[in-house]
Image 1: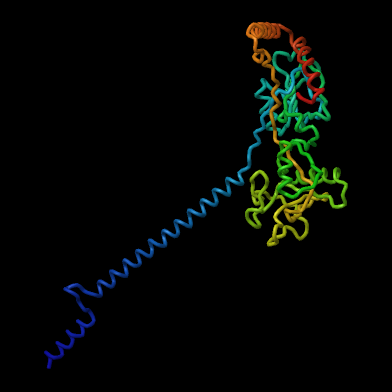
Image 2: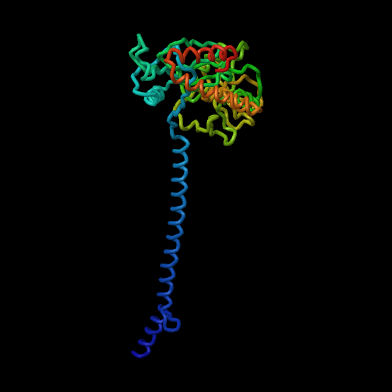
Length: 352
């Protein structure tokens, strides 16, 4: 009887722990579960790392797109022996031209008057050698005067393109084109005059550009296209210079705007009461353009090399060299007198 009970117990244990070729099947199941869990955890870890990578990549892109560009304006000498009488927004003493450029850039100047070290004894009546201007000279309203103690520099050297521009101090030069076009053609119109459709993503820009709209347009509905749209992705507005609107804290949406999920309502106009409004990009409006800083047009002074006859070309080059040596030996006032003669001739053609 005991043997039978022992046999029954052994059978029960065997049924609870079946074996396969000497290997415990239950142990195999446990081992399988461990491997399954391990593989699952590895899978989850890969998903986590992928999501983390996407988040970091997106965050980096967002930071790059939102990174505030340090204004790196380049200034060019427009004319020697002249000084602009436009309002000076900051004064300082600069050891050299580079110091004055950096000071003007730091103070968001669009131009400056600089007194070179070698002529400061001629700079009577002025104690500051670097005068920063909020606005540059433009052809239609030049206030330049002769002054042997100063040279005039500007970030906007091409007077032909900015002849009819309006200045917003320390911001830039703008123009309102009153011919109405759709958004695409409006962009083309700005680019044809060396400009881009204007950025409005600051309170100062919106305020001053709205004033230009109000003062210039005569229609009852005073609005103009500006450089802001969500054409590529609905609800994600981008400026004409590639910066996302989400990078800026300033908004000037009119009540009920922006409008989403409406076909072709992806473009923005600025009205005369400082509001942004989303409109159908196919509608025709005036456009606000923002000029690029630009170097002066280069004068073609290489006259001698255009002469085909060798003897005449040699004579011309000899005279040119003699003139250069003569200029070096002249006083600042004498050099200015010669330069002013060229200046007066050029300004008649608005080509400095």
